[in-house]
Length: 167
Image 1 (cartoon, rainbow, N blue to C red):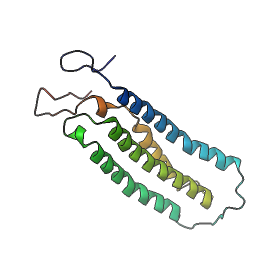
Image 2 (tube, one colour):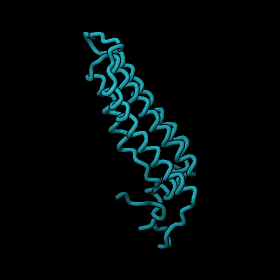
Image 3 (cartoon, rainbow, N blue to C red):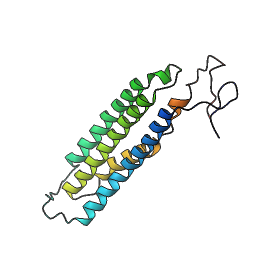
Image 4 (tube, rainbow, N blue to C red):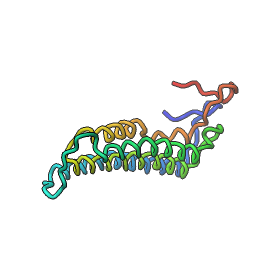
């Protein structure tokens, strides 16, 4: 079923929007699979040369990863909001800005996941080092590309002609 415009007809979708959405899906799936490939390599390759220190408390890798995600994720969302500010103003976003904004958020989460896995490998302990990976993975899973910012306008509750009821 195609999206409808205000006159009831189907909206025209440009080739750039289709390409940006396909590229976003490929990037998202690739970024989801990379940590699992890294986990498979870490399991397959014996790590006898890795320092296996016994931490009495919380590992510095865990703290650095959590700090990175606590600062980097909101910063990435801010950058995405800045790139896609046309959507907040009631217009559609260009495909280039949509892709760049989403990729910024996804790469921030991906870096957090990779640093978390490296920390698990270096410290030779899964917990608490795997917690940032799980948190970043859940956020990445929920941020799949839907392209809504490129195809529909944001609603304005004060204007009944532009308001789009959620759901």
